[in-house]
Image 1 (spheres, helix red, strand yellow):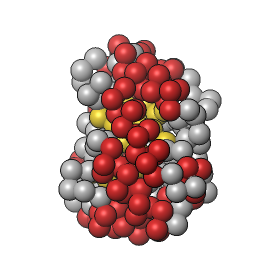
Image 2 (tube, rainbow, N blue to C red):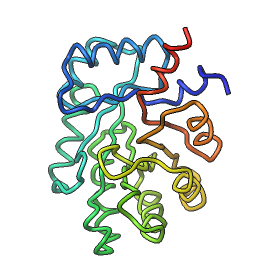
Image 3 (tube, one colour):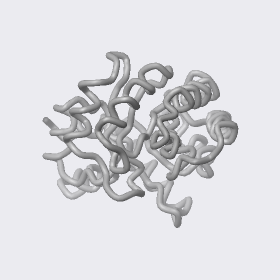
Image 4 (cartoon, rainbow, N blue to C red):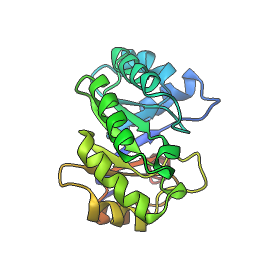
Length: 217
């Protein structure tokens, strides 16, 4: 697979706590130059970034990030605020404690509420696979499928591990046909990126593929 095709599936990401506007602007420049699917950035930079890129590049941000234990009302506010500021896509983290307590209906209802707060914009649901059993992941595939969200996403990149081939395969076997898959966290090579796509991922959360593209110039 040509690197340009891989780049079109990448959410070019910078979510560091120390990120500055100069760094975010550089990520936006990269996203526009390499035609990435989006740039995924902290919510506090969304308005500035959207004004900078206009309609040339989708802006993605994260809410309930990275731990997922904000209240539903807080997550809904964060989502609507992000959209009001210009976000085209929202990546939310589920309440992982609820998953451990098997509060599946509550998780589904929360995702649906956040989806409604997105006002028609794309919603990706991070379930943080490294903290879950396969059985929990399978049930969460149903929760996301039933919620109205467009994507299920493996990881925040801020926990014990990131995306694995096994988890993407598991998602592909258990989500409804309308739900797409985003692999994120630790994707560091073109070979791995291509493998995730072959297994069913439509999006990749990574900054390293752009770095590889630069190195090839």
